[in-house]
Image (cartoon, rainbow, N blue to C red):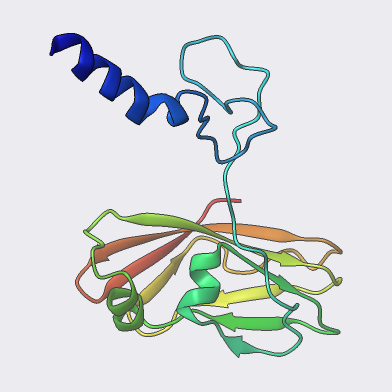
Length: 154
């Protein structure tokens, strides 16, 4: 009985013995803490940015959550964040301190300015430099119910 049970288990799981689970099958294991693989890149999945913004616009939560917006306009461009209420509605499990990174990439020689929607406070320089290929990264952090801050990081 014992041997037949082991044989049955072996038959059930044999097809899975060579199964290799990997999100990136050709890139190694990515960064692995303390095992010495420091020459491998930290690999992660991101959303592909949509078409470049060419007019002043209020960004959607989806655009903000994608992590990046590209701009290309012939003069200074204003980008407004969604409201804190919209962010709270989209990120229903967010607690105070929940954060994500958002980057503006400008491809024209004009400044891009991030303005906070109602309940969103921009902390630090809100405008990118008026140079070609200027970017700015912001850490959006939930600071309370109906309150988010966008901290300029670079």
